[in-house]
View 1 (cartoon, rainbow, N blue to C red):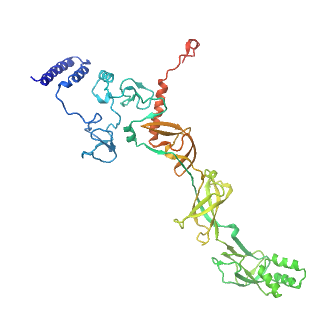
View 2: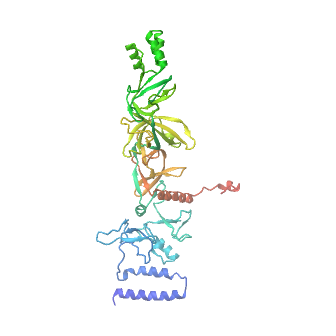
View 3: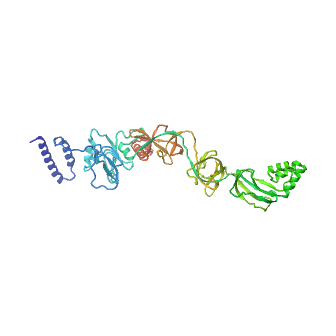
Length: 501
């Protein structure tokens, strides 16, 4: 008989006896002895195929839910979000939502699912030489509860192992490569950049109040003839608009020509609103004209015409209203919250809804002193050049005002900051899966970045994705360290006084 056959027969006999003993004695420690004997005789038995990796997990018989990810068929720490093949053509295994999604090394409870408490304690007492030593097991929900051996909580969740070297006192938390890949941790480098936080507000185009002219009578007159000028026409300075007859104007012109009170007579003509070119013509020809030609005082568009041939114009009547549209105003309504970031002189861009593909640039020239009570907004005035007259009063506009400074500052993406309302923290990537929570002081925001005024410097690498999970690990570690700290002995005197905790 060969040596291997003899060993197999001996082991079978031993197993049969043990099983008989176990059938009559419930709760005996024999199952643990059987496994120990099986381990001791393993080198005598014929070799059998083994998994390619200790991390390789069997495929669950009944899996439900969508595919979460794909993992290496040999159990190596390699995962993919899409179907993938190995170098030798084998497909990655699909892991469904119902399966145990895990990337750490399995603990003793998972490696021996059928073992009892005695077997777990024995396995923990004799770990493999290549395995890291487990210090204790912590509650999976972050509660301040630890265990020296593997166990489950009230919901059936396994306690998580804490290995030697993980519970360091340098303020960092260490995450395994599997967890990093599974949670999709991403990092970015803190850089110096110019931040601009644009303030956006709705607005409307209005006329420049300083470019409006009104032609009105300062004495009664009769309209002799109105030139071919209508509402909407563009007129130039000095262009004739109408001819009129006024007895008071003629009397003032005659007095001016007689030389009686020369300076006073000319001043009277000017006070009646007679155009300067008409007064010069009277002085040149030395004649009192039967009618006076009234001309446009400036370039502009006729927006009002209230005069007709032969009508009588009374003193104070408005005959024409002209507006120069070469420059226009944009009146924008900024919310009370954004008002502090806006100042006069800042550059503003405007997109008229009539020309959505064009950008017009101007400057904030006035912040009106009062807020609208109904909308809690403040009105701003932005001046824009309009040489071609394309921007028309009444158009709606979308205004963007560039705020902030041109000075570069240390900035990180907005997603890198964990803001609880009381403290602001970023997670500093120290390399090799180690992360350090670092309190920071924030500054201006803009373009998806936030200024870091204190806490980190340019060149530091911070976490921008899955940082809440790492922060939770860090908080849990701090809580466990606080529980494990030894409190000082209050001493006999304090105990006698009843001050002992």
